[in-house]
Image (cartoon, rainbow, N blue to C red):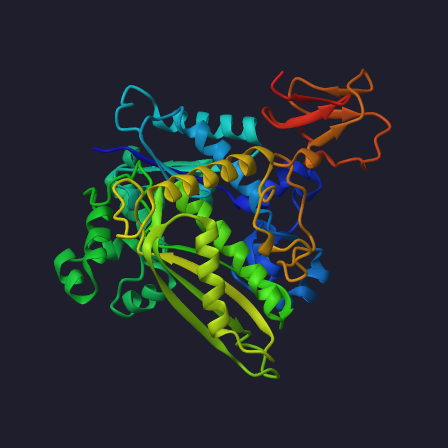
Length: 475
């Protein structure tokens, strides 16, 4: 029997914010999407108020005022860095890991039969909490689908204490548990397919588990057959330890304010192409075509609607930002119409091919290709060392009044030198205790409640500045 573990950070975006702002602990918190539009993460307190995932902020703003809900803008740089920290910790617990999403990771712990897997999973939780401050739950099953379901139980059922191991449970106990879980909670079913299954009498997981896989394949798809077989312990979906090379790369954003002029649109398109090109080079690929699109808001009934896009084939595939931007701006001129309030623009790189063995055109100059590659390498290395956007194309602009609205964005505590946590001094009056808490006398911070652990906590590995020197709470 396989032992597959799924480790999932609880309310990931909200938990990241609470690590650096303990005043948010036990308070209702939502993290909003681009331009502070919709709720993309909710604390348990917010979920109890009935606010659903993806709920538009303007619709529950009044409810937020009534219940003191704290709304924060998305801080993607912080979340990505905290995710990398969690994934690197998990790599120490198993040599076989699949990073499934920014807050989820599968681990194959099949070769750990001599260990008590529940205790082993609890040690994962303890280390991640101690080193990053993030709470996680762990589900263990014989397949990835069962591991996902076990993780759901670990979160929702208190007696499991954050770790649920289906492989250690008796079959009768599992069947009773599955009868209590809605079929919509099965990985791959979701809200859209659940009503169809319920109409056929599959109201809970146990009913779906007992169904005929081949018959369900004929009614739905091969994915449904795999799901049912996995619910019965047959591994159909293996761990993907290597990241799949993307077949398309998309970069797009909604504007913070409506954009009418071509100059602002060209700045935004240049920025999106630059971001997509960096991702293209990171996976060592060349693009064979580029698609550019613009549109107005489909929800604004006062303004006329316009949407258009254009695909440009690239005779000789490239990863050069300059060439891609030149093509994208040419396409933008073809689809741009004056007099509209544009709300969104984006680009998509397609027909991606590996950099090695690229087929060049008859008129390609190998010297120019080498120069282009060297220039992009220098550009990427400077931006990696000095910070994103340190070196960029002038057509990207500088003021960017159209940029994404993030009115309540927290500092980038772990990725920006200017946002590092600062301590005036470390002395008997300002002490970091053995349990990792910073105790400050005469602090300007308000006194925290007992539920907030009496002091802001500095978790191991979180960099701080003390007496104008960079240090870490590892010591």
